[in-house]
Amino acid sequence: MIAGYLGPQSSFTHQAAQILFGKTQLHAFPSIPNCLQAVSEGTCDCGVVPIENSLEGSVHATIDYLFHKSNLQVIEEVILPIKQQLLVSPMTQLAEITTIMSHPQALAQSQTYLERHFPKVKLEAVSSTTAAAEYVRDHPEKGYAAIASTQAAARYQLTIAATNIQDNAVNQTRFWVVKKAPQEEQKSSAQIETGANIAKQTLLVTLPSNQPGALHQILAAFGWRKIGLSKIESRPLKTHLGEYFFVIDLVCEQSSRLIANALEEITLLGATVRNLGAYPVTTITDSSR
Amino acid sequence: MIAGYLGPQSSFTHQAAQILFGKTQLHAFPSIPNCLQAVSEGTCDCGVVPIENSLEGSVHATIDYLFHKSNLQVIEEVILPIKQQLLVSPMTQLAEITTIMSHPQALAQSQTYLERHFPKVKLEAVSSTTAAAEYVRDHPEKGYAAIASTQAAARYQLTIAATNIQDNAVNQTRFWVVKKAPQEEQKSSAQIETGANIAKQTLLVTLPSNQPGALHQILAAFGWRKIGLSKIESRPLKTHLGEYFFVIDLVCEQSSRLIANALEEITLLGATVRNLGAYPVTTITDSSR
Image (cartoon, rainbow over all chains, first blue to last red):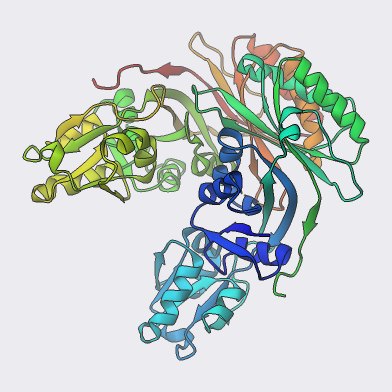
């Protein structure tokens, strides 16, 4: 089996893919659409992509691709803690650091630490945390530091000069494993999987005539059946301003028959439902293994 | 009066600010937080920032700053068509173009045109459409082109080689004018403005104990009063994964008393409501003036 993931190597998505599938048969892709397209076309058997971060919110590239361009299903979710490390070349002392490089999001996540400890050091945005670590390894004489993962430190033989420098102790990212939907599953929006491990189900719902007022009616179908929603979010349909589809995450504590009934009912009410599937959720507390 | 806006000059936000306030007393800021902070601190009397694009969705920097860091009110909304032009130096022929530069979003919005007409030309991402136009003006011998606005063409004396090259005919952006809330308005979340021109009202709602299931109850308070919602969106509270606040846009067709009653009720139900205010909405169909 080949699993694609949003690269580069040593990225947090790579960590998630390693935890799920071990270190073999993994293939890095340069972008989320590239990775999802490879799964759609059958080049990869499944793909691992980020879907939401606790600070930055949803990853629109993932949700928009799944809605607009693919017929993929979610088969698993894994939640990973995001811990940023300050990495230097073994020959660089903390006081010698002249520039700190990383992905813009990692720089933003470490803002408080950087302002306190390195208020005068130049910050430089690069394309990934891995690219920053690679640059630091390749230019040990420059006194550069990178913000990247523990895995990147090991991979590029860098020293961890400061650990867990991210602002928020509960910085976490959700990753989805997606695979191609079998033909018959594509046809039935109300189909539901069952199993002891199933924790959540995600729906992409377009309301009849794009009336956001109808949202209340749709939510009522879940509400009076006591089906919990763990998330609801609107994304533009890319048609006109003010026209959206909704991403709805259901908590699968209730009988799957109740959920199937609710889905059938909201389809009868005129909504279009794309069922991304029901899937187990695993939360990793220590990703340093 | 001084109005701040998200710069640089000739950006679409600058266009919106010019339509609203004329060409005087405008001050450009390099980022949305910079601009909003200046309004909060009183350096500017009001600020103009983008809030949503029909293709890309909400501008998170704006909504997150308004929720987490400021006590600003929305006083007006203006909707502008986003039309991208291909600009070249007067001495450059179409066939001579070697590189096309622009902001990543403008490159993405013109993807279909670029693939059809310039499949082999190098694309280069820069910090703004204006920066691209300036570079093309400063290097007329290079055969570079920029994707930018009609205003940028005039400002940098460039020739429009192809007009309206954006993919989607209905590409529009919503901009908000914000000002500092008077002290008394900050205290009353249920306060409501009235007036013939008031079209919408925006609320930032945090649910009791962050139960997304409670969302149904909140929406019911608007639903059975037939108060229309033109938008609902979740954004992370930046505390834990799965904890959100909701951005709710109400359509102000009903009596403002009905809206005030609904706000009072959802506050009694335990939700925290930050009222960004009720405001008129102006849609510009031709921004070339």
